[in-house]
Length: 317
Image (cartoon, rainbow, N blue to C red; front, side, top):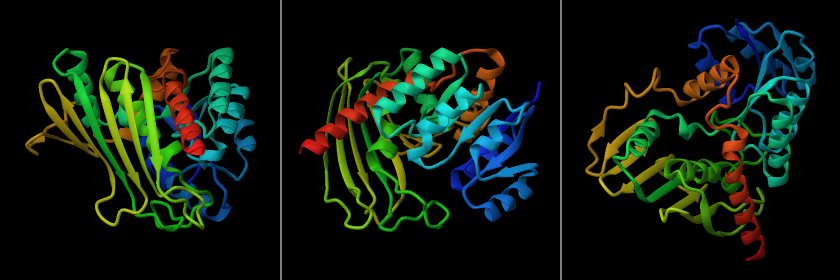
């Protein structure tokens, strides 16, 4: 069967999903939802999407719609995920699932009740570079002793990845730290049992901390140090150093290097080098096969418990 999909959020990340879906057979995007109608119509025309609206409810009312991908502002993720599940649709929501732990718990409870596929876009689980390391761990060839991660942006104004003004404010803890908190526990195969955080000054206009430092410890003894900044005027993105018992790996986007900075070929790890496409392939495969996807709401929920605990620490400091 052809899986019929609605995509909400025609911004930078929505476009990445549309580009990935083009490579996946038997999937059709039939509806596009976004805040600004004119821009949404332009994107829909480019990708041949027949239905355009500014209201998610309009798309959820389409009788033969199977699934929804949410690339909307963080503050809408949990409530829109719930709306999709209540409408009987499978849902993939971009990271983060929520910015309040109780909202993430509500999504997980509703997924259990409906039985629909509910997945969160923790893309690092799917990037070939991180998959390579994960397979080494699963084979018993590598065990993490420490992860050292840097998440750096230059974002002193509220602009998105396309250089356009955002309608919402990004967040180092609930958005960007979520990638590493989840990946650390996933790669270790062990829950996080200790977490500490400190943050720099709050930006007078954006109202968020622009710098943050996080320490994590897993139940198996592995540790992680994560540095995050919106003030970094230099190379941008997230850089992961895996220090293990048999090797060191450095992941930069979809590229992987050893500790001597020699490149490792990860082109054969999966059917694509595009982490977003691989993430979408898993979503649609789970729908077809009637199974829980990798990065399901239930699998990632503990990440948001850790973020909640860290937020409580920061507010108390």
